Image 1 (spheres, rainbow, N blue to C red):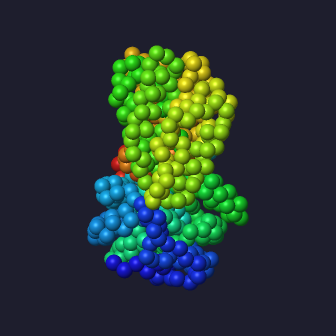
Image 2 (spheres, rainbow, N blue to C red):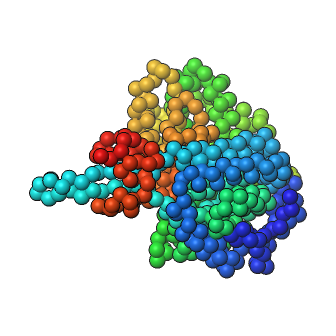
Image 3 (tube, rainbow, N blue to C red):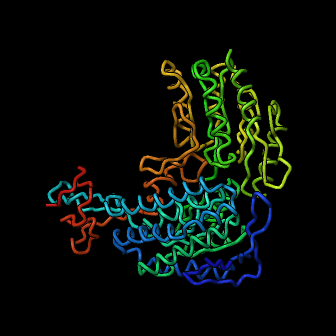
Amino acid sequence: MNLTGANFIAGVPSQEGTATFTSVNPRTRQPGAVRFHNATAEEINRAATAAAEAFAQTRLYPAARLAEFLDVLVEEINALGDELLTTADMETALGLPRLTGERGRTTGQLAAFAKLLREGSYVEAIIDTALPDRQPAPRPDIRRMLVPLGPAAVFSASNFPFAFAVCGGDSASAWAAGCPVVVKAHPGHPATSELFAQAVNRAITRCGFPPGWFSLLQGNTAEVGQILVQHERIEAVGFTGSLRAGRAIFDTASRREHPIPVYAEMGSVNPVVILPGALATRMEALAEGFVNSVTLGSGQFCTNPGLAFVLDGEQTQPFIDLVREKMSARAPGVLLNESIERGLSAAVTTTQARPGVATLTGGEAVAGEAFCYANTVLQTRAVDFTADPLLQSEHFGPVTLLVVCADLDELLAALGALHGNLTATIQGEADEGALAATVYAVLREKVGRLIWNGFPTGVEVVYAMQHGGPYPATTAPGTTSVGMTAIKRFLRPVAYQNLPDALLPPALQNANPLGIWRTLDGELTKVAVR
């Protein structure tokens, strides 16, 4: 398949910008063969305007038609075949097995949203029928449901070129909601992004959707994203990436004359609390599992366990030594790009300079052809951690900080000082339930997902998943970016008061023609209004 290096504005290739860039192979540091054009302000304007024009049509599409598009898109992604995998591997060095699995996750979540749409109850229809005889005043008939929010800007992530990129969870949930999408591709994998764009455009043509339903903007500068977020026709933003970039987007959206919601997932240190019983009964397995999680994907996961808290005791030092040995013995993996290697080096250097921090292993970039950083274990005391907010900085790579707590009071104080995170984990034994409950009571206020005897890496795409958390993990802790519930980010409620049945959307009509679950006068039911 031929790559053009173009932006795709409502299906039309466009190369108006003179500034160009290439991808870089992380294993060899060699540039890619195709030069990609930074989107201009005019191209961005056309993309956002086309999205608004498309929304005038798609906002009224029945759910079944949106589901058809998602199913056809799955077919088109699969039709890209091995070229998609090899292209992404060249740009990210994530490896064909990992990318094959990620492709399945990406198509699987598109199919899951299609299933959600066909069932239909996601609109959360609520009907409170009129009470004309109520005293002292009658109650009107009020009916409420969720409707699409409008054109969405989606920013691709570097570390998931499929699942959090052009056709990833943010785009999938926005499309499922009935919202056109303008994607800002990540400069780390522009060729992969163009392949996905071609698949989306073919699906749009097959399904007869307006071309503005999707546009792809390339760019290796912050300016492209900032212009997109500022555009008056964009109504929401989905973002996965760094705290610095996410906060910049959030601030830009807030300064608009018409502020819009920004659903930014900005990383996390994902604390793991290891209770004494776990150390005493399964130290070897615990250390192996922990190191596996820290180094998975070269540590480039937003759920990477960057913090571990242990109570000081007889088993503590042997566990720390075991983690250090296993991290030292494991060959470090390839990082995604030079920016991540440079940022990780700076972050670790800053942490190493903080009072009370010791480097047990690693702590430096690995010289060689590939972008690479040594598997790193740092250590500090709970009193130092509690007093120093900088020790909560994310190290996006194979790095973890072990925090030794003298007693339970120190542990609880350290956990109480935590900033917002995506996850928190407790490793413990069944007879430590009371202690675990005390710890969970603190952690619940800090995170979006609590884990027992597992590790945070690995996020299931299911209805119950909560992939979000208090700031700075996200800008919207009441939402998730993974799972079917993510659709709610791109929907808003509208209430209809005393409208005649013929003017109501089908989801709210008396006969319930869609056959969906509705809350009728306080009861969840599928029955018709009588």
